[in-house]
Amino acid sequence: MHSVKVGCLAASRALSSSRTLRPDSVKVFACCGLHGSVGQTRSCQTAATPGETAVIRIPRYMQTRVDNVKQTRGKFKINTIKGGRILIQSKDPNLNQSVGYILGKFEQPSLCSKGWKHNKSFGDYFTINNIKAVAPFVAENQEDVEQQASFSNLRICKELVEALDKMNITHPTTVQLQTIPKVMKGQNIVCAAETGSGKTLSYLLPVVHRLQADKESETYDEGAHKIRAVVLVPSRELAEQVAAVSRTLCAPFGLLTKTVGGGRGVGHIKMVFKGDQPDILVATPGALVKALRRRYLDFSELSFFVVDEADTMFDPSFSDMLENILLHTNIASNPKEIRGPGHKAQLLVVGATFPGGVGEVLSKVTDLGSMVVIKSKMLHFLMPHVKQTFLKVKGADKILELHQALKMLQQDKGGGAVVVFCNKSATVNWLGYSLEEMGVQHVRLQGEMPAVVRAGIFRSFQKGTVDVLICTDIASRGLDTSRVRLVVNYDFPETHTDYIHRAGRVGRAGGVEDGEVLSFVTHLWDVELVQKIETAARRRTSLPGMESDIHKPKPKVVEVEG
Ligand SMILES: Nc1ncnc2c1ncn2[C@@H]1O[C@H](COP(=O)(O)OP(=O)(O)OP(=O)(O)O)[C@@H](O)[C@H]1O
Image 1 (cartoon, helix red, strand yellow):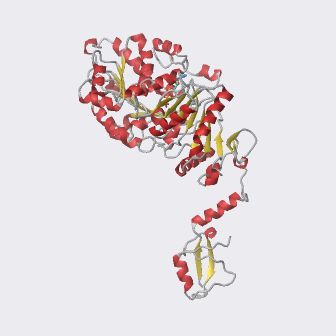
Image 2 (cartoon, protein in one colour):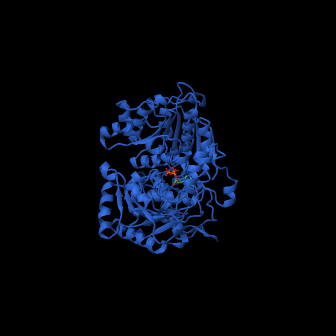
Image 3 (cartoon, rainbow, N blue to C red):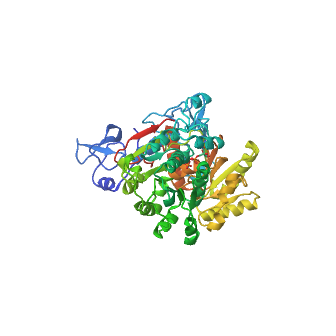
C-alpha cells in the first residue's frame, strides 16, 4: 500500500484533539469507514483509545488516481498488440490494439482519448480501422450470393423484380430477407437495421406488390380511389428520395406516388391533393397534419402506414404530430383485419437507431404486443467495414484540417464525394463562405434555408453536379449518399445516435466500398462521447445509450444474420 495523505474536515478536527499516532503509522486521516475491504483499508492506533483499531478508508477517487499513475508508468501495462491487423491505431503505438486481442470482461481498456480533456492533447489522434471489406448486411462473396434467396423467392411479382434488375439490385440484403415476408403476411413490424442496409426497399417492395394485387382484385373500386399507403419521413429531401424509388417501382403498374412537405404554405399542400388522389403518399409530419386538419385527404382506404427514421419521428419535436396523425388512422391489431370491407392499415416502423425511450413513445400510439421486431445483430454497433478517425484539434485549426483532408482525398484516391457535418446552420454558412474563398466548390444544406432555395440542392449533390456537401444533421437521416467517400464531422455530433446516422452516409449497400469518417474533436463534452465510442470499439460492443429491447411488452423478436 502507498503512503497517501488524505484529509477531511472530520479527520482534521479529530487531529486537533489529543490524539497522537505511532511513528510507524501511515499518515492517513480519512473519513472513517467501519466496513472497508482489505484492499481499501488500513489501520492505525490512537492514543485516545489505546488498543482500539480505527479502520480508515481511502476514498475511491484516490484509488483511481493511484491506479492511473500505475498505468501511465507502465508498471502493469497490458500488451494489447498481437500479430496481425490493427483494430485501433493510435499516435502513441503503445495504445494500439490488434484485431486478435479480446479485452477481458473486467479489463479496463487503455484509451487513446483518455487525456483528451487536457490542452496538451491537441494534435493527438486515433483510428478505428475497418476489419471487414464489405458491410455485414450484404453477401461477402459470389458463393454466398448464389446460396441466398432471390427477390422472386420472396414472392415479389416479376414486374418488380425486373424493375430492381434495372437498378442493378439482384439479391436482397439481410434486412430485406427478413422483413419482406413478414410484411407480406400482414404483420405490423418494427424494423431496426443498420444505416444503408436497404430498409427503404424492405417496406416499399411489399407495399407496392400488395397495392397492385389489391388493384387487380374484383372488389377494387376504381371510382372511390383514395390514398392507400402513407410513408412518413422527417425531411423534404428524404420524402423526394423515397418518392423517387416508389415511382420507379410503381411505373409498371401505373400506380401514382405523390409527395407533400412543409415550408411552402397551405396553398402548396392543397395543390398536391387537387386532382387524382395518390396510391402512395410520402409526407413530412407538419404538412400531413395540415392536410388532415383541412380534410384534403381521407384515410378510410388506408392499407399501409409507414414511419421511416423512427428515432427522429418519435423524438419529442415530432411525436405530438405523429400521435395526431395516428389518431386519424385505423391500425390493425392482427393480420386478419387488413383485408375485406372496412379493413385496417398495417403499421411499419423503420429505423437505424432506437435510442432509449422510443419504445415508450411507440407504446402510446400503438399496441406493441401486435408488432414483430426485426432487429439486425449489428444494430447500434460501429460499422466494421468503415475506417473511422478521431482527431483532437483546436477550433481555429479545423478549417485547415478539413482543407487538407479534401486535398488528400483528391490526391490519394482520385477524388470522390464528401459530406461535411456541422451542428448549426450558422456554421454551415460560415464554413461555406470560407471554403469558397479557398476555391472549394460545394453546396450547402441546412434547415433555416427558405424552402425554394433548399429544393433540389441534395438532388444535385446526389447526381454528382458538385462533390462537397456542407450540411447540418438534416442530411444525416435516411439520405442515400452511395457515392460518398468521406464523411467529415466538422463539429462533433452531440449524441451517439447522430454519430451513427452521420457515419452511416458511407459504407452503404451498393455504394463505394472504401468510405471513411473523419471526426474533429474540440470540446470537453465531445471527449466524453469519443471515449465511449473508443471503449465500444475496443470492447466490440454496441454504443451506449441505445435501446436494446426496443419495447415492452415482449414481442416476437427475429434476429437478422450478419
Ligand atoms: N438488395 C440490394 N442490393 C444492392 N443495393 C441495394 C439493395 N437494397 C438497397 N440497395 C441500395 O442501398 C442503398 C441504401 O438503401 P436505403 O437508402 O434503403 O438504406 P437505409 O437502410 O434506408 O439507410 P438509412 O438508415 O440511412 O435510411 C440505396 O442506394 C439502395 O439502392
